[in-house]
Length: 110
Image 1 (tube, rainbow, N blue to C red):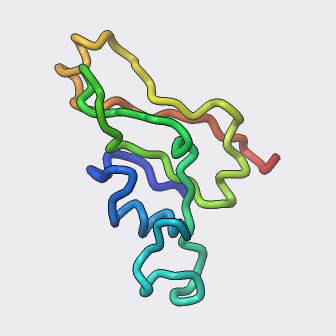
Image 2 (image 1 turned 90 degrees about the horizontal axis):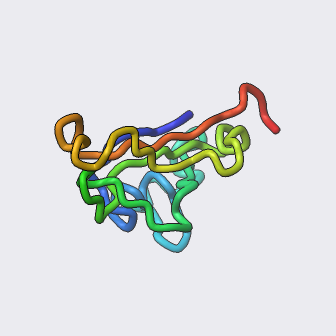
C-alpha cells in the first residue's frame, strides 16, 4: 500500500504523525497499534533529509510524499526515491506549483 501525493502537510504536522505512527511523534490514541484492525503504519523514506517540493519554481517546504507501508518499503529500490525536476524551474510554475516525488519499486520483495 502506498499513500502518495500532495498532502498539504509539513513533515511534523498532525496528519503526518497520524500516517507515520512515529513513536517520537505519536499519533492520537485512536490510531495507535492494536487500537484499529490492520497494518496502518507507513514510512517516509525521505525523512532523513530535507526534501522541499513547494513551490516548484523555488521549493522551500515539503508538502508532497510517497509513504509506503512496511511490505512495500521492502520493495523500494535503494537510492531511487527523489524529488523529480522534470522541467526547468521557470517552466514548472506553468505546469504545477509542486515538484513530484518519484521512486522505483521491485515487483517482489528483496
